[in-house]
Amino acid sequence: MKIIYLLFVTCLLCQLPACAQSEPGSDELFKQARQAAFDDKDYPRALALSQQALAKSPDYAEIRTFMGRLYTWSNKLPEARQQFSQVLAKDSSNKDALSAATDLEFWNDRPEQALVYCNTALRHYPADVDLQLKKARVLNDLKRTAEAYTIAAQVVQKNPDNSDARALADRLKWAASKNMIIVGYDYLYFDRNYNDALHTSPWQLASVSYSRSTPVGSVTGQLNYANRFGASGFQTEIDAYPHISKTFYSYLNVGFSGNEPVFPRFRAGFSLYANLPKSFEAEAGFRYLKFSDATWIYTLSASKYAGSFWFNLRTYLVPGNRDISQTYIGTVRYYFGAADDFIAVAGGTGISPDEARNALLGQDIRKLGSQRASIEFRKSFHQHWIPSVVASWYGEEQSNRPRGNQWGINFVLRQRF
Image (cartoon, rainbow, N blue to C red; front, side):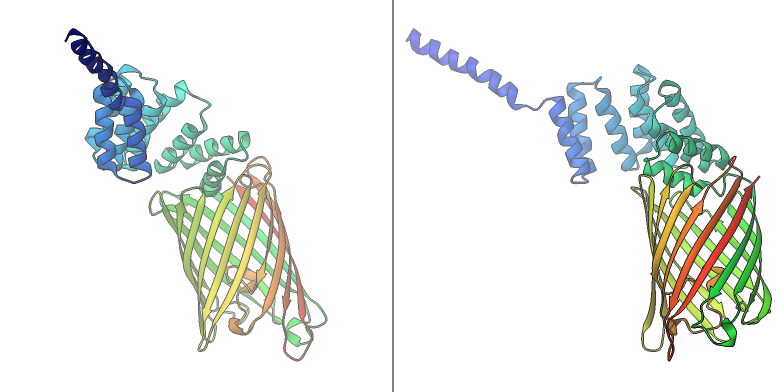
């Protein structure tokens, strides 16, 4: 009997560790919480698992910070702030908690408080690239664009393959200076296959513009002069890039001229841009040109920063009575320095109404079948002077005669001050 009793007690004791091991620990619960949040987007379950984990390990800062992020994503802001405060009360230099608190305040329109957290984090981790970019975004939200651009440009200089930094610096560069003056000159030569009177002499275009950074975005006034079609004329334009939110901004354009067909009588344009995750940008908009007849043109584009490269694909769509004319243009930039230091190559089919030399010139865009290629070199000097040159070629199909070729050269000088 004693032997049976001892065996029974031994079996019970052997089972106790197994029961204890069957309950997940705080690390396992944390792992399950992350899976629920990131894989299943099930924030309530992720919160429940995080709370279980904290019950086992109340001082587990990483779990508490993660729970604060979950509350942030669930729009439970007081609860999120409480979790971050508890972590920072024990460790005021906790990078994850300071970064998460910065995000919370920035996303919820409290940039001043976000800057406090971000500056605190940078005092402890001054070389952290993610924190530097967070500060640049916060400063931009506070309309301190010049400071924001300086930080983004410094990150690009030290980390030229950082796509997020390059995308941010590129977006901020035009607003970083209060003023900018731009002068440009275009020269377009036609080969001998253009034997009509309108193309016997080269076309020339000159422009001068002044841009001013404002709290709502940059505004530019421009005056264009062109000599083409055996005539000359002037056009005035106004461009603006209003900010809408942290994700969206827009482009607005209006132009007037009394010298048709050198320029359209009236032109207008609108685009909505979206800054997307992973250094993507998307655009959708329209262009309107009024010669003797009106032409509506719709445009879509997508851009991606990848290391030192920028890729863009754009299309222009022109509805007709029976079909839709389609233009496709692909562009690749290679950055070898700051946001204004790059070499770009482009190619495609069709023409672009956004280029002054290609203002449709009174012709029906649906009847123009053409190919194009160009190369651009741009380099900044002393951060204020930015010259650029573009060489281009256009090949146009012509009825009853050989293909016509156009060769162009464009010079632009920009000065920021």
